[in-house]
Length: 463
Image 1 (cartoon, rainbow, N blue to C red):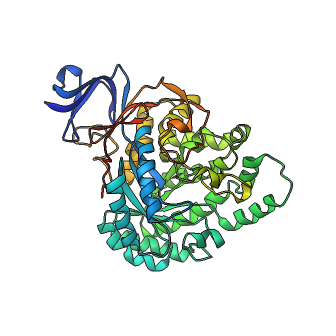
Image 2: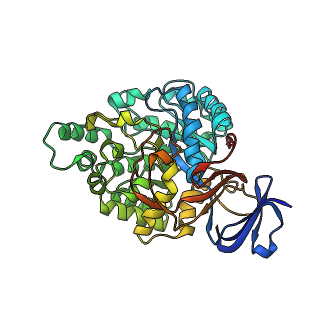
Image 3: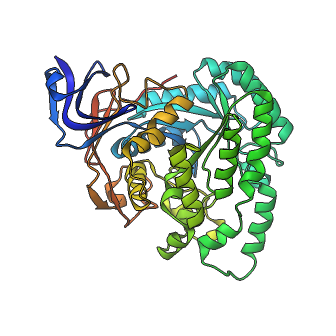
């Protein structure tokens, strides 16, 4: 007798789509195959020919930051944003620890404790390294199960200082030493980088701020961070990482030139991995301006052009872009109001809309391939973050993290129906398709039709 059986479904597995179902017991998948071969179950669900995907893994989440940042904000964000994740089909999230000069191992312990108490989904941590002396903590962080280390290469000045960094930001000798420390601690560990040259960007931002706008807001914001700024930092970071012998992971890749560079480096055999955001696959700056998104769509690097979006989809298709995430932060609506140029940078909440936004964008770009989406939303991230095969895949022995999806289900995004505490969404009033019907974390039903149905948080730290 199994605990859970899903029948009459299209099961998206690494080797193809299986018409039939799956069963799970003890939170683990025990059977996949034809309905006739599945065991009886305490919960026996007819999926009515819907798709069954592995639970999504969001590789790029920032809990605990924004107004009131700190341990209490971290706990509040775990409470609310993990519910948003679960309702949207994200069953594992990778969140940064808090920034600043605090001891990295202590910050990680606080994050693990908070998540184990309040998270509705499983989670992994990325440790943010802001000071050179924090490199000494990496061996202990590896023992805590942390494999990814964030470096804000694109920050300097007041923005860097706000994150507890030196005013000059992350210098290349600092990054070289970091790659050495990471590689010697664990061959599976790697740096993640925000690549966007801050010197040219800050110069252009001030120029744009102080002259009459030639374009509407988000297209002006785009002009302040031209496409060259990402590859200006991706290439030297990749050179250093390759020289030292560590992989490097490029977060929120946005520019066509960056996709071409990452593809070229990978063709040389270098361990360079590209990540992009659902927002970059969905929007262009011109489209977001047409819908008056303003500061809600203000992010570094910016939402770009049709050419860049097409290049990103090309990268998704050929494996240059390995993962898709959200860069989620729980910013209140008030932080996105007032003068555009002074408004908080960041897209705000996003895990609740990650799946339907990506499905909708894929459909518009003739890229709606559920096997491909399972790879970039789940499997590739699990492999890169050392979670595979426990996470990111539907196969016997893996955790029963499951999303039942009706690709034809469509609804207009209303923040009142999302679980995030932010009260707004980048996709507000957008009609998205592909909402989750049911979401399971380790075989336990946590959400149904965007509503949380679990009685208590079920998420756990996965070291």
